[in-house]
Amino acid sequence: MSENHPINATTSAIVFHGYTSSSKSIPTLANINPSMLYDEKLIWFKSCFRPHFDEMIFEPIDRLVHSQDALIGFIMMACVIDYLAGFWCGESREKMGVKSSYIGFIREYFNDKYNAEDLYYSLRNGLIHMFTIQNGKYALTHKNPELHLTTLNGQTLLNAGDFLEDLKGAKNGYFDEVQNQSDLLDKLVERFSNKGFLYVEPL
Image (cartoon, rainbow, N blue to C red; front, side, top):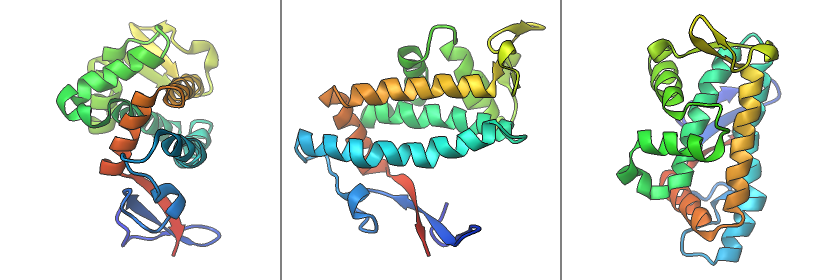
């Protein structure tokens, strides 16, 4: 969202910025670049990036999936896999390709009850880009945990709350590895420095 379009909140006016590491508005989040020492990157990731990601991404989704706007929550969750796959691959994603990185991330961090290719075509390509479930592989529901990953009329049912918990598990598994594997941390920092990430500040 452009920084010229403020969002009116109930308490104060805020604005979303497309942030990169060259921005100076948030010194804590902005204070990172790929040439920094490993320990400095790790402190930045643990104290700045990881909590910021949870606040900006998962807190709103938590509100959506337990409301009548659960469908919007599904769209957001399909997007989040894309965000995480991009950080996982770093700048090599341009060579690897969006499809390979999206499918690769699901196979690496989700449990094997999910078909990574089906999620890519049905949710990323279908739900995000065409507002439909491409290929008819899945049907979406919410507040029906007993139906999650069961089959009805040839379609696999995804319950919003359960899918969110599995997405959180995938995110936490990946972020935990980032904290313990320098190559993953380097890729994340590289991606963040070049592509940026949204943040909010008061007007």
